[in-house]
Amino acid sequence: MQGKKVGVTVTEHLLRQQRLTPQATGAFTLLFNELVVAAKLINRELNKAGLNDIYGFTGDINVYGEQVQKLDDYAHRVLVRRLSQSEQLCAMASEEDADIIEIPSTVPHGPYILLMDPLDGSSNIDVNVSVGTIFSIRRRLHEGGPVTLEEVLRKGTEQVAAGYFIYGSSTMLVYTTGQGVHGFTLHPALGEFFLSHENIRMPKRGKIFSINEGNYNYWDEGVRRYVDYLKTPDVSKGRPYTSRYIGSLVSDFHRNLLKGGIFMYPADRKDPKKPSGKLRLMFEAAPMAMVAEQAGGAATDGVRRILDIEPQTLHDRVPLFVGSQEDVDEAGRFLRGEA
Ligand code: AHM
Ligand code: MG
Image (cartoon, rainbow, N blue to C red; front, side):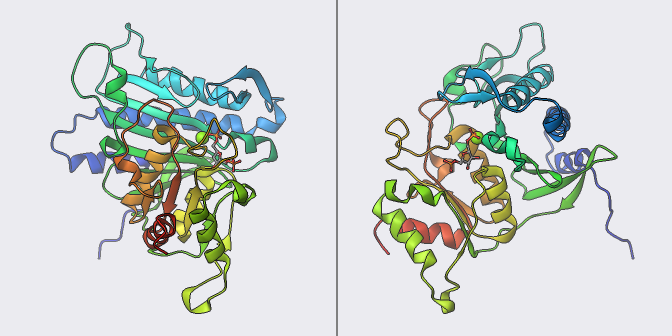
């Protein structure tokens, strides 16, 4: 009997998936390889962060009025530098940059647009908590000419791939191209990502809820009632749920992807400048929503499916309820006042 092949690298996996797509040219695989190289560089820098006096702030303020940390800045620059030379992109956008990032005219342009959060959860770096890089890849609508903002501002259903790198106790890549969700673990000595979690499926219902409960008094009543419900014992319904909140979206999402549960960052009244909560539609919510749905889970803003929301600006924020299908459905019923 022929055994299952072991030691499948991410490139091999991509090439196999591309074989299922007759019109594939290899451009996507080349683009993805560059993304992987950039992530390895970020990973290396993060690993020695404590040694390099690299913690702390650059002193700059990003587009959200937040202080930029040195490693955010490093991750952003590495990704822009490598990916803009990949010859597979026509534009990029980053959580750390107000505008679309143009590809230099001296570099051949490709058919893809990359959106990214270079280092999500970066406020956790100096306490050695896992952080991540989130990416979303789209195909441009028409060939040639400069990319317009309208071409970038398209809903999440138009992503051709999405995923994240998590820099944790081991470094992993989790991605989807719309054919399931696959996880790879970086072998530190070989510097290669190997398939370790094939076709990840999220449990239909979980036992974990993840939310910043410090904001309880700023939430709408529906969210408060839902969280109270999750904490109210009813053994026959699997309650109380377990509370787990790292404060690093990639880490909180990754745990719930594997174990089941719900992650929430609802709208709140804490900061009048952020009435829709903290997370960004294009750079955080939409890519995580594609991964969740491809793994059998769901993602909404409480009412609407995240992937159907049309962005108005590059940096739109959106409430996010993402995780196991039945948990996200149940949260929706509380938010709509039906439960
Ligand atoms: P960042 O992209 O600036 O790091 O912010 C996003 C992070 C998420 O990783 C995390 O889920 C959230 O902020 C935590 O926010 P809070 O500290 O308000 O709970
Ligand atoms: Mg982020």
